Image 1 (spheres, rainbow, N blue to C red):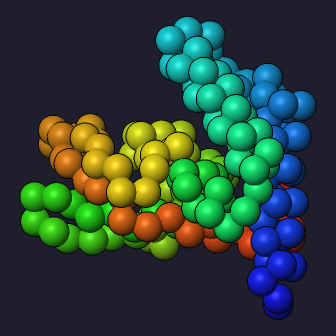
Image 2: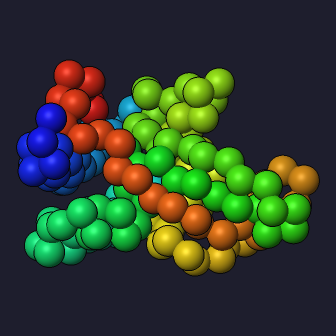
Length: 152
């Protein structure tokens, strides 16, 4: 597959996400957070911020823009600052999560903290045992044109 075809596939994926989140936000919230309250409001705010991030990336679309922030479909390589250990996760929609394959939902505690982070940024992640400092080493957008997996 040529580079431009892969890039066009990525653009198509991001447009599909944006359309889905704009058209189906209420349905998505009802499915994953049916109770009204703080948690639902927090997810709603995250979806709004994420949609804005997608709009900015699509407005200046390039290889650099799709790897500038962690998106749904991004593989993010983290370096744990304390011990210099690296690990990669792919951020996915909730129904695509597979912890054994390091595919984590953007709604999960770690996924929600990584969504929209930037390369070379250092972040404090809240984990069950406390907090851990990580540096985002690399971001790769992995949904390069694979339209076979539904996001709905």
